[in-house]
Length: 138
Image 1: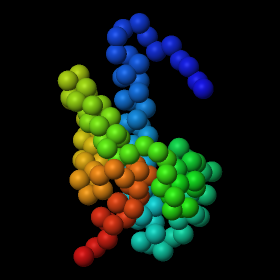
Image 2 (image 1 turned 180 degrees about the vertical axis):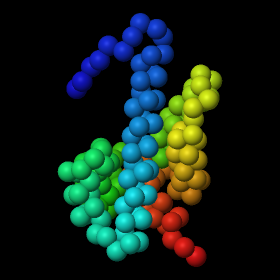
Image 3 (image 1 turned 45 degrees about the vertical axis):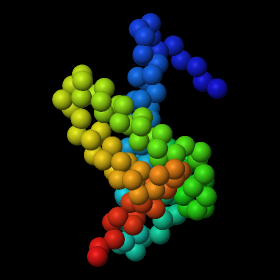
Image 4 (image 1 turned 60 degrees about the vertical axis):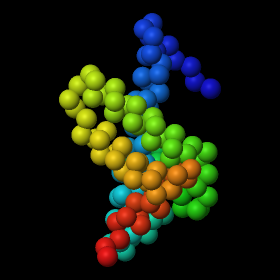
């Protein structure tokens, strides 16, 4: 649908893909955590998403994944946690080779790796379900 010229160096297109998937994973993970926490405070998940979507918290997780795939309980984005974990792990490896600024990548990758161990093959939108279960106090 959309095509972009990324650069002349080999691997720049792959790097762009890893950057994009890292941002997507981070948005999904952070939104899932926020919604699960909001629900524990008695807030309605649909209302939270509606507020986020007209506020500074809006992102593709709030505008697309939650309304179409998570709140409907479909969990059918068609991209597995296995693939997302692979991409974010590759992103983290590249970051570790090139910089020492990797705190967010390590955090997100760690969460994805835990989900992969618990739910291999699951659609990545089930990160919300995983985080919600993980956040319950014993």
